Length: 328
Image 1: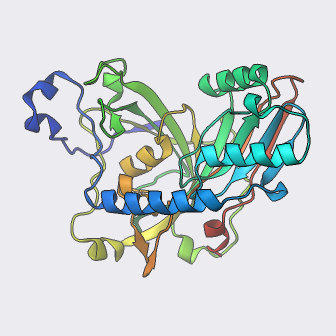
Image 2: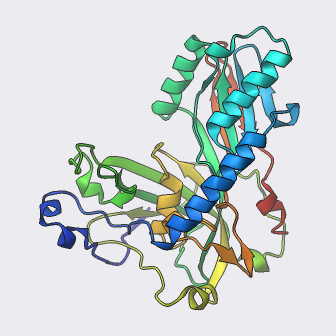
C-alpha cells in the first residue's frame, strides 16, 4: 500500500502563549470566528425542535426485549431521543422501567442516523463496553465540499492521526508522533483512524445512481494511507467564501471510523481539505448554491455488532437521509 504525507502548514497557537511550546501542537485550525454565531443559532433551533419532538414507531429500526435501534433525525439532541422513547415505551405498556433505559452510543446534535438504546443496566454495560473497545463496526455517509481536483489517487483513503483538545479548547488533529503526550489541562493525545471510500468526486455530474449499500473488503481494496505528522496539513483555499465556493464540488464519502473519537470524521474530512457541507466548526460552508445549510451533512448509516444477550450477529442500516435523496 502507498503511504502519503500531505503538505505543510505550521499551527501558530504556541506563538500566542510561550507555555504552549512545551505541549504538542495541533495540525488542524481552531474553530473559525464565523462558526460561533451559526452554532448558537443552530443550538437554539435544536432546543426548540427537541422540545416539540414526539417519538413514533417510524423512528424504530429494530427492537427486542433488550435493546432498540433507532434512527435519529438531524437537529435533535440524543437526550431528547432517549426521554421521548421512554415516554413512548411507557404508553406502549411494554413493562420496562424507564430508569433502566440507557444510550449505548451518541451522535452529534446535527448528525442523523442509527443509535442504540438499551433496556437494562446489564445490557447497557455490555454494549457501552463494545462501543468503547471499538468492536462495533460503523459506517457513515458524508457529503463534503472540495476542489474539483482534490487529490484522491485511490477510491479509498485511510487517515491515521492523533486526536485531542486542551482544557476548554477545540478538538483538533495532532501528529501521530504526539500520541500519548500530555495536553494543557492534563488530557492526552489519542490515536484516531478513519477509512474513507470515495463514492463520487463530483456528485453534480454523477451519471448513475450511487450504491448506498456498498461495502469495502478490507483484504482486497487498494488504498492510500495518509499518516499525519508535525509537518503535514492540507491547506484550505485562500480568499473569501464566494470565491472559494466557485472552485468547489460536492464529494460524497462513506466513512469507516476505526476508533471512536469525538468529531472524528468531521476532523479528518477537514484535514483532507474536504470539510463536510454545513460543518462550520470544521471549515464547512454554511450556504450552498444560495441555500443555507441547516445542519451538517453527516449520517450514521450502519451498525454491526454482537447481540449482548443472544450472541447473534446483528447488522442494521438506516434509510438514507433527505440530503442524500435530494442529490439525484
